[in-house]
Amino acid sequence: MGKVGKSGPARGEERKEASGRESLKAALGRVPVVAAVDLGASKVACFIMKADGVRRVDRTLTTTGVGYVQSRGVRGGTIVNLDEASEAIAQAVERAENVAGVSVQGVTVSTAGGQLASHRVSSRVSLSGRPIGDQDLIRAIQAALAQVKLPGRRAAHILPIAWQVDGQGGVRDPRAMFGRSLGVELLVVSINEAVFQTLGACVERAHLQFEGVVAAPFVSALAALEEDEMDLGSVCIDMGGGSTSAAVFNHGSLVHVESIPVGGQHVTADIARGLSTSIAGAERIKTLHGSAIASANEDREMIEAPPRGDDPGAGPVIAPRSLLKGIIAPRVEETLELLRDRLKASGAPVEPGAGLVLTGGASQLAGVREVAVRVFDRPVRLGRPRRVPHLADAASGPAFCAAAGILHRAAFGPREAVSAKALASSKIRREPLDPGANPVARAAAWLRENL
Image (cartoon, rainbow, N blue to C red; front, top):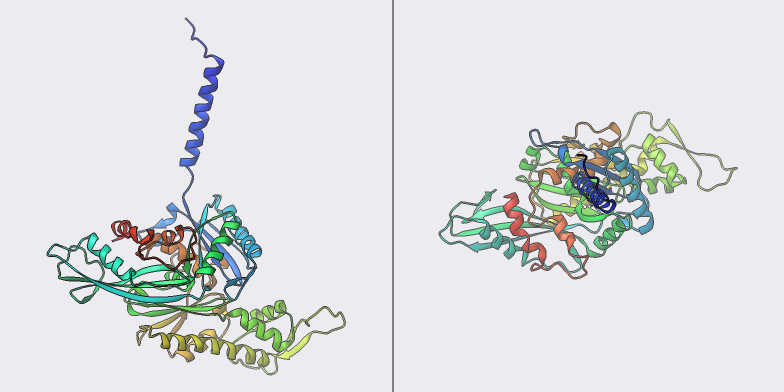
């Protein structure tokens, strides 16, 4: 006997069910990705990494897509044109998506603007006779966060620096230990609330989910510093187009963040004024001939710059290369001296033998390392994204440390008392950080997952 054929409605239901299964399958098969956007005054870069791009054996990363465009709408580390900045973000993400062959839903943004500042708070709680457990750690963190008052500012990072058991410091994980008291020291890195809101609005205008903001010097350090540099003490200086910022590490932890609104674009503007040329011409001269230290025959070597304006009869500006060095060197030296003085005034615990690592696009200017050695009187090296071995030459320089560092942070930590996503999840609010708000309640989940 032949098989009885299904009726029209039954076949329709079957097709609908099969279609539903395919949609569910496609949704479940969607590749989870981490997307990092470095929003700078000179460029906007996007790095994309899939979950299988993390190799925990040798702690290396593999990015599946990289895209970058010239920055627009950003000046001095601050967004000055929302439409232009959001368009630049969208273009950088789209270029990275095309290379990776995936679709990005949300991004984490790094910035050195927003008047970055760090605050250290500590607390101590009493213990019972039981071994130290998660609840004791939560109580210590909550007691420290209760002291945080940041009117008009938003916390970007809340990082445990060290734990203490009965006053004994340097404890990495106090769980299962015994004692009468438990202490914790937290570093709270904060950003101006208005800048935070603007960043969120800019990302959302690019049709992306805003998953949090991170401090550029912090994530640049994660990409550029070696483990022993963090343990022995080091200062990572991120020299961007609109700002110069620093992250101080000691005993493996971030202990201070500093930022000043002076960067590579100020050097370009100085050249444009000094040589009466255009900004574009000054940038080109800086890249090709610029140096912060003297070189041989610089008095006899002449450089040409395009004239400012559109007068067809105006000839090129011709000047000795020594004049260019005389413009660049004072600005670079002044910027580094200002940062050095700010670090001293802050009381940041910079170890006597701590070295300096330079990152950011402005650090690639010839002679900057030598000037930094003279200003800080410390060993200085140029940092690059480490442990991302496959990056193309164009995206493997000091200018891409921040974007690579966001991926390092997502893959390997460091542990944070409250995640950046949790800090950003409460719908962009105007009031100061409330220690009793949702993020603190999530401290328990963080402890269980990370400690």
